[in-house]
Image (cartoon, rainbow, N blue to C red; front, top):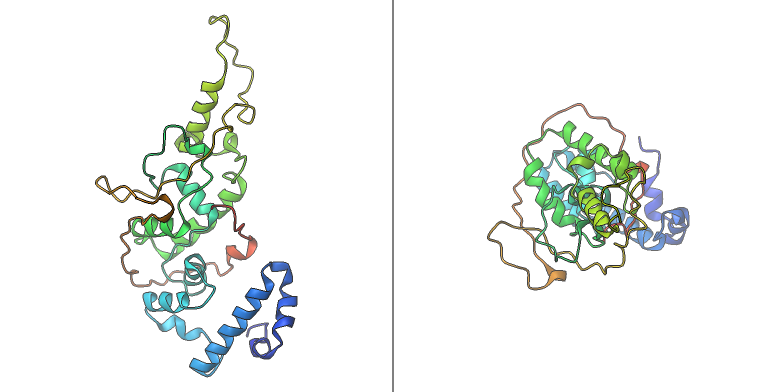
Length: 271
């Protein structure tokens, strides 16, 4: 049984709901949407119960969840993967940042003056999710779940938005972000007066390197293929995407705890 009386929430004054969740942020907006959805459930199904979603085909369940005001693709995929135990792969800010830095998600050629490690604007998360899913959809549900929470943890510990811990990162040898950062820092170092004397004792200081004075430009959209047309508007790009239907669900024993509950997304982390 749920520990929360959702019927009481549905009938409560919306201001009381907002006050209860005020620490979450955007509490007034969220309170109205929560109550609106609860009323919709009672109006359409006669009770507050979502167990029937488990019996729907995965794509039908996905469409229904996307129709709920306030739920985006990432939240819907979290519900499908973690609660309904369907095949899905949510892409949050951590996953998106890691995929771009490691080069798992290709970008159109960047201007010569813009290095990958200076990017402040990444492709939108939905574009990354649609690019990754056709390449991950054959994995089983347990593997998708583990990949999801491992990447979130990796993004919190190593591949942070600012000042990533590249020196301790186990993937730095494969990271395009780290390679660009090293190359750019070396180019800005003054040449030694005596070329025969090269000191390797002084560590390279990325923060002091004169590489942050460049104005970052908006990043182009994802590549569709080698013959893809150039985007006419960088702020309104339409990326790829092959978006196949979800495979039939398979039964795998899954850890029920949701890793999403342990972290709060920074809405400005990838913008």
